[in-house]
Image (cartoon, rainbow, N blue to C red; front, side):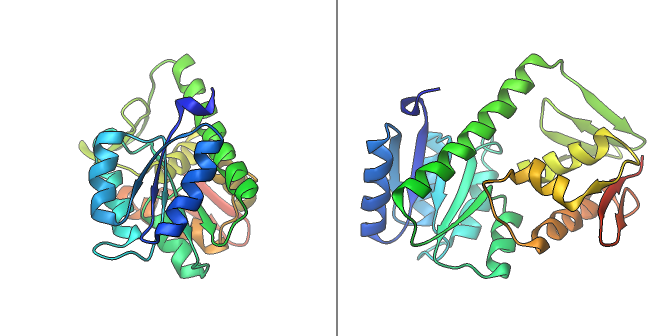
Length: 232
């Protein structure tokens, strides 16, 4: 798919960052919209419906973490790609970002070619996933009181519906696709983020914890020092 078919929303409170990033994205053919704070970003995202959002964390009025959470709550935008573009590189900041539903974490300053490469990798991976979904039949996976609805991107526990952020849902699908099979941490990282995204080792633990909070502690087993497996 040509870049001109992809819409990107750039959110940052620094005008020079917006101009720099927007210029380089437009030069590559992307359709670009911008916002200067989190509140505006949520409203613009609702109307603009971007394929990807580059989102700063430290902003006035509403920070990037809360902005990400609010955008994820907009109907039809659970699958929108969100990458934090920020100068903060601490583990806790990355974990907070991924927990809020981010897909990538890009630290400033960044060279234009590297930024474009990361964006292309994210869009390509997302497009490939959607292509696979369209050729597969609609499926629901049932494991006792847990039902995983692939088409609606949601789960049911004891007949109660729950929405899930994209990464959590992808992780649950991976583990439950082969019950009792041990998935190593490296396999999980590769499946969720690929080789283009670098995340903290603690990030996956956050996702596992969130899954356990929603589906119960007994479903996902930890094999210390190796990985995780799903028990039906």
